[in-house]
Amino acid sequence: KAKRRASLGLPIDRRILIFAGSGFARKGVEQILHAMALLPRDDLLLVVGRDKSARAYHRLAQRLGIAARVRFLGVRNDLADLLAAADVLLHPALYEPFGNVVLEALACGCGVIVSDRVGAKDLVRDGENGYICEPMNAQSIVDCLDSCTTQERLASLAEHARQTALHYDISAMSTQLRALYTSLLG
Image 1 (cartoon, helix red, strand yellow):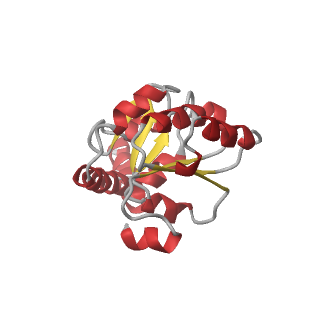
Image 2 (cartoon, rainbow, N blue to C red):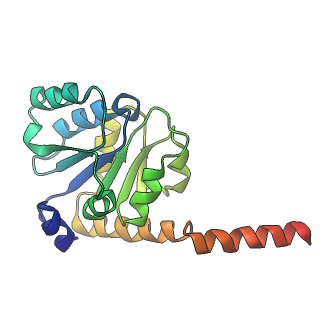
């Protein structure tokens, strides 16, 4: 992670949190910002994506006194690199049928915090490769993040995240599909 962070101009000695997506209101960006205000001063949040109300979120970060700890990056072509550099993806959405970004984060070795209202919650083994929080709830996000404050814990999350994603690569999925058809056809 250190090399990747250095290449992206990110600090190597801070916990890096990331949100990636559009539709900031439905996906809980406001609650993430409120959670940041409750977190230690050395955490850094990357917000990747586009929203028509982005300026309002910038202003909220300023009002909360966290603007220096939040980077609004807009749409990026290097999301995989950013996910690999981050420690935890935050996805406390009110609703999301699946949320590909969760599987992408796991594949990049990034632990995840997702709400219990997103389909991708089924990928999360609570406390192992990530955490499940209440949707749109800043304190619930903080409570989950309080469980992963040490480098050892973050490294464990990352390893379990990668292991989870291996079950969903194209080779594994085709093997599972072939086995299913074989069992159905006898």
